[in-house]
Length: 475
Image 1: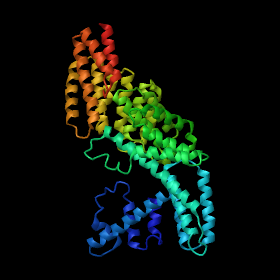
Image 2 (image 1 turned 60 degrees about the vertical axis):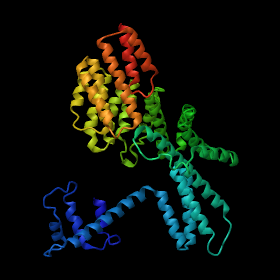
Image 3 (image 1 turned 120 degrees about the horizontal axis):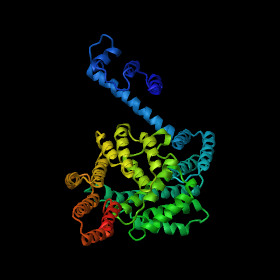
């Protein structure tokens, strides 16, 4: 607010004294702006003593102040994108034909890019723009010369940018079909973005280009394995290849690129675990630990940890028996979430931790403190209650919650078909477990254990396998 006030008072940005008065008055009521005195009429009188209220004029004041606020946000973002700011300066120098200053600035920008020397998706677009700008500047005016090398560099960087982001969009669209219900044709843009064609193109470029450019070859290997992780035949091998590339070369990757690749691998691991194909919780925990250790959820002091990430980090830690680490994570990292989520998510995190520590009454007590739930946590709480009631032997409560959860899943329009199937499969087997707990039958238990063990797309498969196995042993 103090910094924005300087902008409002600067004649370069604002020459309306009425806006300065208006902002100075509004600032007194920051941050809630809840005082009953803040009316349009009152604020109009502050800037126009004795004048009759004019709604049209007051709306103009607010519109101008809003435009200043937008310009301020633009400046903040420009400060973060230093290279883009430098390109803007270069472009302005070129348009003004200040050649000497342009040459000095160009060398400065090129050295800066060389020093950074990190593989990053967005940086390829910046390099493309730099070489295009350089080419346009040097092929106009008196000295018209051939600068094909600049055009080729511009093209290569644009191709890199296109390949990386088109590949990441393709994989995201494929992954989203498991998470979100959608009636859109997810393959409508495949006319242009065909993953098979992209793979074929990259393989050809790798053979044609100078293999001395190892960073570009490394970059292509990343894109290829990223794309191939969605293949039912090559998915696991591509994941292993990408994991090796990332962990062995993390120092070559920008923070943005490292964040994307670790999260991309997490999506693969989560889907494989959800489908019941592989237990990949150790891989998930390792990837998230690296994200947290490198503070990639809090770059530029802007917390970006989502509720989904929080849940999966906690779950993967506990499934790897990292109880102390999980407790520290709940206490220290809950502040990376949006403020309105923190209190309830802390109770939720403590409930899950206490469940794993076999303190089932304590877990229920923490759940009872949760005042409001976000959608994914609602599902988690249903499942947690079902497991707790079973472990405590409260089978009537378990059956009641199971019935309520079944109706919730069946009627939920937000859940994808994939998630509905995994949850309904869980409820089917859960109900069978309760029935066989109350009335044991060895042959039926053996059959149930075999069914759960061989099932796919089943939530909580490992827990149910252990429970059913214990029931069988006791019989």
